[in-house]
Length: 281
Ligand SMILES: NC(=O)c1ccc[n+]([C@@H]2O[C@H](COP(=O)([O-])OP(=O)(O)OC[C@H]3O[C@@H](n4cnc5c(N)ncnc54)[C@H](OP(=O)(O)O)[C@@H]3O)[C@@H](O)[C@H]2O)c1
Image (cartoon, rainbow, N blue to C red):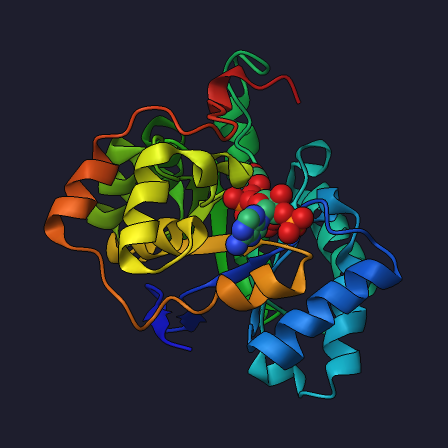
């Protein structure tokens, strides 16, 4: 698996295996184990909010492959913001995973002005201070954020000691987030693309289907190649063996500039298209 190099020198595999809605039971463990042992994924994305960190840890242990061959990400949920809460939530995440360090820990969503009119910047900063402490203590190899738009990131950048290594945001055909991606690239922050298939919706877009048919590829492979070609890191979820295999088999074909431009011009291919300032959670 190819890697990107984060702003602190840590290498991260260019495709991650998503686990939102992957069940926290035997079927979930089997899907993750299949992804590891049959398809070769080493980068797994989970979150406290997914309530399946236990299954991620179990699948990694059952694979028999040593921990240091994996890149494991988890995320701090919104109810756990603040310095002390973050410290406790991180310990809980490691307990769930039965691991003694994380490769990447992210603030799942920014505290926002509509919910915390006077304190949102301070809340994000207090949370970040805890992330910095955990990072400096060697308990996390890289720290970052998720769903941060430039106006959430800038106050953090103005005050932080450690620049976030990653921003994980929704990106798929029809939802490019051009401004946020540009901002992150300028600041040396690696963008990870969540819902790169638009939660499956983009796969029935006629333009994507036509390009895939012409190239002898699947619509999912076209979406993932398009994300990778932008220098972004797709996190793709499946619990279906054939799809798990297909979604990592994207390194032996390319999209022409013409096809890329056509996909760039798409405006609605489904997905959640969630704006972080408008969420209620
Ligand atoms: N930071 C955040 O706030 C945030 C938010 C959302 C997601 N994420 C992360 O990003 C990951 C991916 O996002 P996502 O799960 O929302 O959506 P996604 O990966 O875009 O799409 C997943 C859906 O597509 C289906 N699928 C996968 N591969 C397919 C293929 N080759 N052909 C046809 N259908 C296919 C899956 O079905 P089956 O599983 O049934 O095969 C599932 O229903 C998540 O799992 C999570 O790790 C992060």
